[in-house]
Length: 99
Image 1 (cartoon, rainbow, N blue to C red):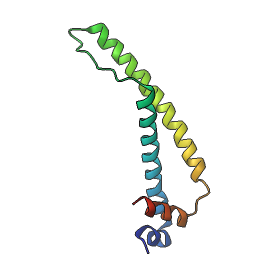
Image 2 (image 1 turned 90 degrees about the horizontal axis):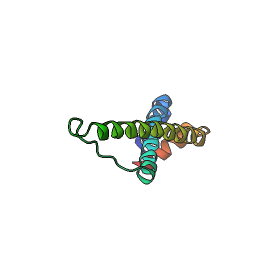
Image 3 (image 1 turned 135 degrees about the vertical axis):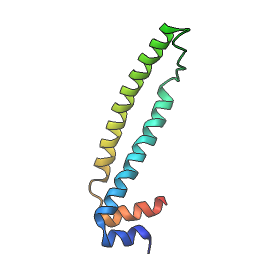
């Protein structure tokens, strides 16, 4: 029997907490893949030599951060809806498959 399945029998809340970390990591990975496809990388110019470019790069970066927060929130909601009906035993089995 696996470690997570044993833990699910004795400490179900711990397994749920560990799985929530896995859900968060999955949301971050999916968000990074999406952002890599739709966003361009912006090099931040030196503020002394190019103050306008520095300000523009910071504006673009703040827009990208806002977009990333929106994407990760939507993905997290989808993951939570997907996994809402899972039992502790099913969560433990999924975690064993992932490790």
